[in-house]
Image 1 (spheres, rainbow, N blue to C red):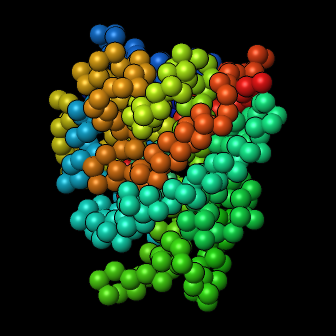
Image 2: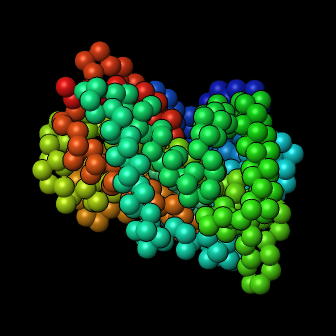
Length: 419
Ligand code: HEM
């Protein structure tokens, strides 16, 4: 693609803008750095400007926005445009998504995330039964018992680092059991995962994390072939679709993507939810007394705490929100804006635990809607129920650092107190 410099804003070396992008749509807003640390109670409030200031177009081109293909992407901010991108897979592709494996020379795709419909459907049909509401009902006693075990470890202290002692452990324990991974890999897994997802795309760190994880998962696959078990890991390793055994690439593509997607997303959500509750006593009191609101509150917390922005690329020339997008262009769906679009939600910045309906993009939408969504919601619900049941009203430690990275890192440390 012919890319030339064509904008008034100063671009760092190596950042370019394609010819077809009108100069007036090239923007470099500070709210794109929303995932930087801040101490706000509502950590995503920087994006409010998008809807308040007339000079911010609903879609623009950000030369510094990075996707898997490098720097430069359209940024869609409005709910309806984002929905169109997620749901129209005739035009918008996810091939190449989350391609961390390419850093260590691997060429297989992430499955199901990096496969477009219609092929994508066969993988979802294969995996979905393990993540259905019914399957999650079956897992609930285990989820509850892990939550209680972890609460028992901190309750007598009257204080804890919620993120470190509960949030980071709880979902990972469930995930390890679901897949059949040994608990002894807990610390290694988190170290590798942090290197992949939280290193600011430092190529060496991503390589370190992906290389170690893939090497371990390959060993695990071989051991599982020799000694099958009754878990999702075994189901994939010995799986078949339409009577054909899965290929080695299909097995590693699924195992690795589940590993990337299943480890710390819920931990990040938990830390944002509990941070808010610790800072917002009236909200915590309301949920403690009206526990029937917890499932809806989980949805509202998800809406107001969107952890990631997903991107897609155009398979053909198209129009989005009145602008011409060319084949190959990337668009970043700014969930951190779309979830707060006033055209869709009244008082969008308020957390209203009885709000209905709440259709948000935190778990994306369309064919790639998060496959672990029912599990994630259940884990969040159970965590809230069990904490309210066993732990008295909690607040932040008086000297606590309120900093939060409002994204997948969220609040890695959350010192709370209830004594
Ligand atoms: C609060 C927690 C979670 C959040 C915020 C989250 C978010 C997301 C998002 C935004 C996507 C779509 C990405 C895209 O379209 O580019 C996605 C896809 C996916 N997630 Fe989650 N996720 C969470 C928990 C989980 C868990 C616990 C699992 C599994 C154990 C999981 C497994 C997956 C899978 C397999 C996909 C790919 C679906 C497909 O491509 O069809 N997620 N998730």
